[in-house]
Image (cartoon, rainbow, N blue to C red; front, side):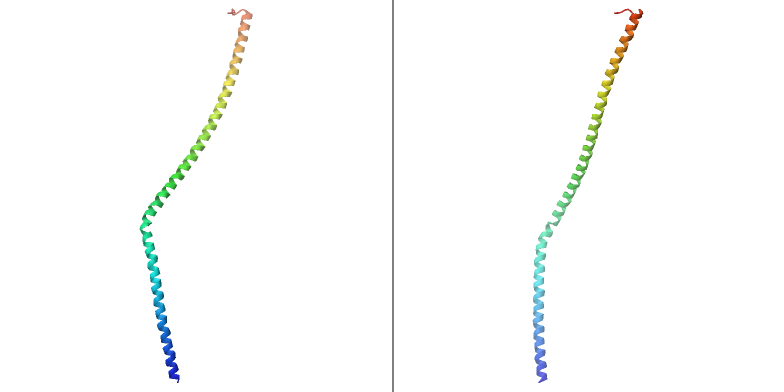
Length: 128
């Protein structure tokens, strides 16, 4: 009787083991199919990778040139502002110089007229 039970248990274990082997094979097969499908999709994408890489490299170079241009433009704008400030300052100094020069010229004329009058009044110079 025990032999029969053991044989029965052994038969069940063998059946379970066979089913497990079938399930494992099916699982492996489905994973292989899934992997094959995934690789097929990536294969078409992989063909485009060199083109995408070239575009990204070109885009990176363009970004670097744009950054350099932006930096140069900022530098030139700062230089232009400094030159404008310098020109405005020089213009003010030139106006002050003109005012001072005109004032000094008027003062010189006044002093020369005063000297002429003194000379005329002293009789050393004849009036024109």
